[in-house]
Length: 200
Image 1: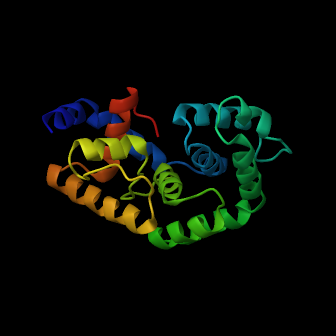
Image 2 (image 1 turned 180 degrees about the vertical axis):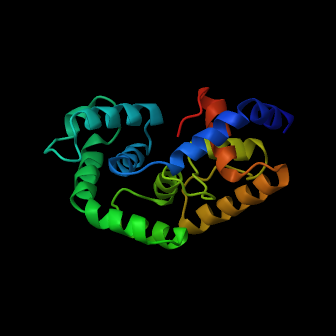
Image 3 (image 1 turned 45 degrees about the horizontal axis):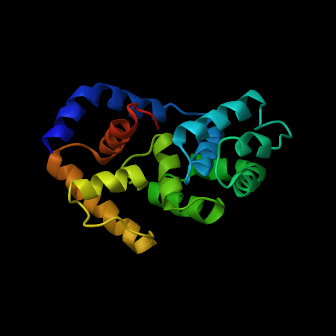
């Protein structure tokens, strides 16, 4: 625990600044954040971001671009994820209208879960956090490993049903309140402790 608090003090300013940056994501950047979150399952966030940068350079949002050759070099399950990107792109205008009009973040979360193929709870929470929403747990392997290390959970789940996801999220929230560090900041802290970088 002392190590967590010590690392937090070192990175607190950078972490808070990063969360503020997420609030300023607008326009086409929202689309590309959705692309990023579709690419991250079982793949490195850094590799997913590299693919998104290539897609941006080709103006994927406005042009007829096949993402498969880009994803094939860096991303697992590139065929399925290419399909997810193209399907999301087709309906993006409808998705964006909901993103900008729905005020309740849980209602928006549930809508995106139903409408974006390739989004589970983790990916949906990741996307919402990356466009400025707070207090959602992004339960990837980095977070789960740290929660087990800190005895917030007793074991690493083999699968994450909705019920189990929400149960762990609630324990994560309680832990964050006990240590006095917001859950979103703990998420970025754990990630930075694993990778050496405050990323997204």
